[in-house]
Length: 305
Image (cartoon, rainbow, N blue to C red; front, side, top):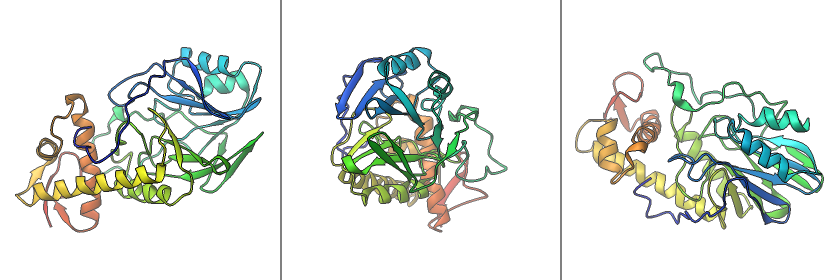
């Protein structure tokens, strides 16, 4: 999204769909051919280990990608399937990989919203949630998933979704951060699916962890992950300041704020930007800084409290 001069984004990601790339010892990645303004060049699936391996994020409902992943591990045994979160570009391919490998599926749980939906909110079927997903093994924060030559610690990172997990490989100083942190763009936080309050707390938590190298759900790896996280947190605080700056001039609805804050925004992202602004407003209303009539919803009008 526009207005991100303060974040050292890297959009250099030449990986082609279906190609297996070994990026570190014990870490391979395969790109799915599902590019979009939201997914960048596509969803990245990871293969962890050698011989007996884990697959992280099998990707969208895409037969060609499932085949590419299974070809990548020919002659090896898939012992674990891990899912960071239940958006349609990350989890729907899981049944294909499970059917082919018999490996159990580990995730936080089924999809759920970050908060109950308000009466005044219309259900948004385009939220991109995979509501059919069920893990075999529900994983809690701090659980360690052990395999042959790897141990991945589940790190609860709600915000982008309520059930988002990162998987930290402490021994290698690597963290598979899903969509919570991405090197190419900020993550979308869209209520009620996502929560800015949770998102900021999860950023803080990641930033205090020792892992330095982040592999995310889209785009290139992120060196110096905790430093990058500090840039992201600062950017979100600046976005909040921009919202308050606009509201200081008088009450406004969300489309008005989006036009004032996101200069040069790709029109295809206007709706997502509106939900990001809503996520900030929800937080500001909860803190008593901003007021609105009724619940903080996408169609509401907002003013300084």
